Figure 1 (spheres, rainbow, N blue to C red):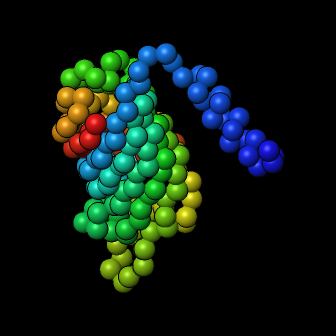
Figure 2 (spheres, helix red, strand yellow):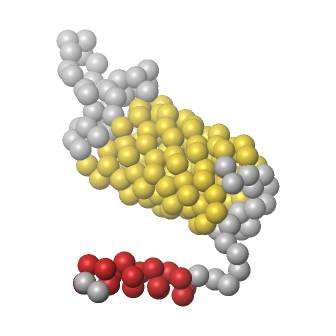
Length: 173
């Protein structure tokens, strides 16, 4: 067996041996939502955002990819986006009607499309260059184990902003 095949074979074996004896529950979640982003040091610099997340659930853990954009009617006036990977841990029973969770993630914020004009208005610029974004937060999910649900969470984005979001989601199985 070549060296290139040893690594995947080792990882698959380790994963199979570390799996718990009980049956695991799997699911796929799709979420859409919106919220506000607030600068820690200047609460009047508030942006409105819209985004989505696709999650793969395994028991009490979820891993997914998300994206969001700042809406053009926000005070920022300069569109930018963020793309991230996130992990969630439902620290109580994820199958219950009310499920609190912790979230952590890493990603990239795109540069904004700000162009200075002659109006004298200088919007807040949170993302003038392509750069990393990190988050940590907590939330609660309300809904049955499969089907439609609502979720709300609060996240700290990097060390500079607070994010509050409300999402509607659907868990397929």
